[in-house]
Amino acid sequence: MRIFLIGFMGSGKTHWGMRIAEKLQIPFYDLDAVIVNNEGMNISEIFADKGEEYFRYKEKQTLEDLVNKEEHFVLSAGGGTPCFFNNIKFMKRSGKVLWLNTSLEALNQRLLKEKMSRPLLSGITESGLRSYIIRKLSERKMYYEQADLMVHEETTELESFISMLQ
Picture (cartoon, one colour):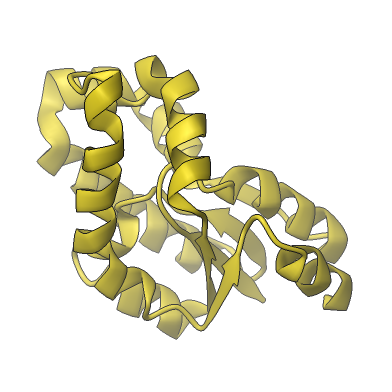
């Protein structure tokens, strides 16, 4: 079983991914962390030194490598992962895709605290963050909506989903 968690940055993919993997007793991977490990530099450095296009290619390559090597895992994909190189279709063919649909308010609050560690947010002011989230969510929604299952992260839906897992 392969489960891919998608959603906007700050939606809780890593937090919930670890819980789901623990419940299923299968490995958990954070796609960004795997890329950082492979590249020997953090995401901000990759963006600054090599650009977003290079990062997105590495994201695709790493995603495919994991699927080719592992039959069972839970993966926290980056917020933009489903939106490039037909990654959403690849994930759907390779396992189940779960969209963590987190509210605008929760995303805004979380990302205000994490702004400095998020390369795509580095040049955005606090007052501009909400508009940025709205714009990016509207661009990405068509990809996120292709998930096999959508849950609202702030409700008990996700807890119910985890409790139903074998």
